[in-house]
Length: 120
Image (cartoon, rainbow, N blue to C red; front, side):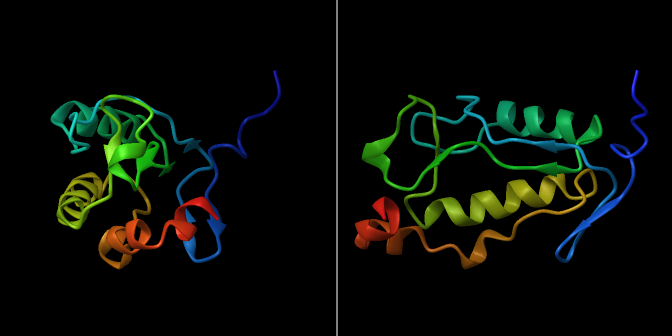
C-alpha cells in the first residue's frame, strides 16, 4: 500500500491553513426542512465528519431560488432569513473544522432579483 503521510499532513490553500488534506465534496443529503432550513440531523451529519478528521467541508447543494429546488428537503439560501441561521450553524462547527465560511457577505435576494447571476 502506498504511503499516506501526505494525506494527513497540513496544507495551505491561499490563506487557508488545513490540518490535513481531507476534504468533503458537496453532496445532497436531503436533511434540510421542506422550507430549506438547517436541521439538527444536518448539523449532526457535518459535525460527525468534522470530528472524524475532515479538515474542509463544502456544504451541500443549496438552492438560491426557492422554486428551483431539485430535492424536497434541499438546503435554501433564497431569503435573508437563512443568513443568520447559516452563520450560527457554521459557528457551531468551529473548533472541529479548520476553516469555515462567514455567510454575512452573501446576498441571496440579489441573486433572485438578478437571475443572470444564477443562470449565467
